[in-house]
Image (cartoon, rainbow, N blue to C red; front, side, top):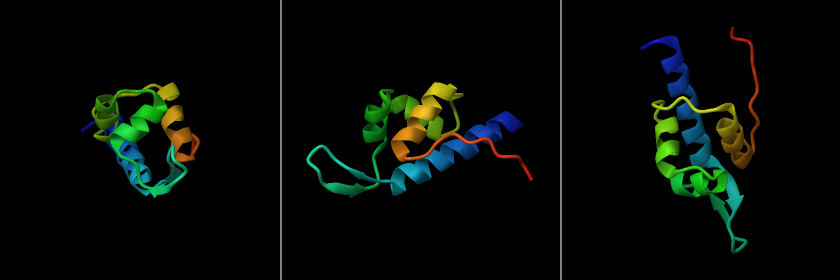
Length: 83
């Protein structure tokens, strides 16, 4: 696996972790914990199949899509120096 593929897998796994742990309020005002891929994809206005590929590290997404996913999950894209 080349380095870019490893990064896609790492980022995808982190998105999946955050999606499953996020706390949010649904359309009826009910507090929920965790989202399905479909729920996150709907909020990001992307296809669930694309989100599945992103989470699986199989899809090189754009910064716009990544930013949208992060925003829905309550995060922002940060650039951190590797150790």
